[in-house]
Image (tube, rainbow, N blue to C red; front, side, top):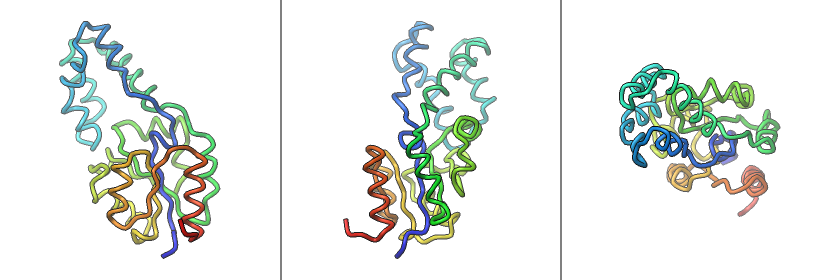
Length: 204
């Protein structure tokens, strides 16, 4: 079955990101124990990943639960977004751009409320690909089967016609279990060569 669509994760693939450790700085600043910020806000962070809370509600809860001012929360969230967005993987973004019109292209991302707008402003992802599936917009996240099935449906392809690239082994394994071709991202050269091998039908 020929590949008709190629879909990419964002963080760790199209964006080069490091650890999300902004909370350590803020816990030190606020005199909190390690892990306390995430502990107090765990339900809100989880809801933000699947669209169960608005940005405004998240900010309000952070003010209340951490005893901060709105201005302090805005500063903390600015640190969050700097780490979340990382820097653009310009070589791979350029490669993705030239895949069309040979293939449909897309994004499948475990995301957080507010991510689409910020990633669009930073990297112009909406013009890069044909379709974007964000977990916070569709209410389900990787590695759940439903988000892969939704991605196939939105591209109008069968699982065997989709190639998916992600940096996490668990997400790659979940895609493969559904019959999707999947590659784990390690570096640009490796993943570009892997894509070209799969789409050409070469044995690997």
